[in-house]
Length: 424
Image (cartoon, rainbow, N blue to C red; front, side):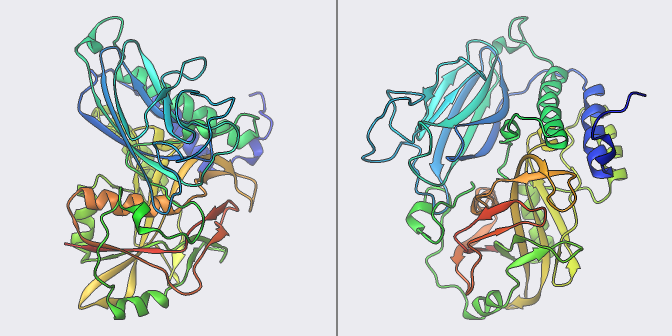
């Protein structure tokens, strides 16, 4: 065997992720594309283009809608009063507006704004971006919904694409990003961003702006005051979780009130998937699901700690296979207090957007979107859309987390608020 430079640094978690890529590539069986699919994305205005990992075929009908998230300063329709400048990707569109293109390079961008509809004329791949030259004119994110209906021509020779081809394309992107993260290639890992669901609505912007008006397009917030006892209990929560070495990491950014049964049922209705708890189970699950023509959506999740114990549950949401590189996910711990006899669950959510070096040991790990408020809002929004929410309320505790680093060394920013989700 010819040695590969850096191979000695590959740890079991790294080998597992690479094995899943190879395994699913080998086992991708053809299947006709289906229609009526909906995909949710969080588009950061801090990067020019985001790969949605969504392949489109001739004859497909695509409807795209967008809104701003959390305390985002940005509006998908563009920045009011901004002067059109030279070098914009789409000179005819407002500065800061949401735009799209249907190929990686050389394709003309088109305006999306708050919404648009497309009829796909040839096999394409969707990218979403921000109409800016250089730095974005505002800080924040867009919550984007893409509804795809497969066209009648998608079964034709020109427009057909087997499930195996689609999965291999996704895996190729994931594997490329994976190897860049492991061996330090020059290309950015932005190609893995995007994924259905969600991880995920990543909305912060300037920390502490806390505008409910900016949140309104995504979350329907309760006007009732938060229960004083619950506010006091949230004030006493740890602000961040930690790893097994006591390194502080992700921030506590949401709370769910409801019984364990109702919480798990609500997450299932909102299309969240419980993470596999062991690598062995994950590999077996990938094999079985692929042979049964299912999509594997349960990548393992590392263990983090709160209240001195590991998470009670881990949940994730992503497009099939793209989860290897990109996913919305969170961890839940049962709180040591209740609200009027109801169980309370404390969560920490982030959006994986690719791979990077673990600052602790140099191995490869998932890289998170630094604007973590969006995953908080994505979680609440997904439950609200599923009809499982009684109320959503933002609460700013004392000594809020505005900026920090996770346990692997990646920095993140927040407005510091906790989203309180009370289930029906």
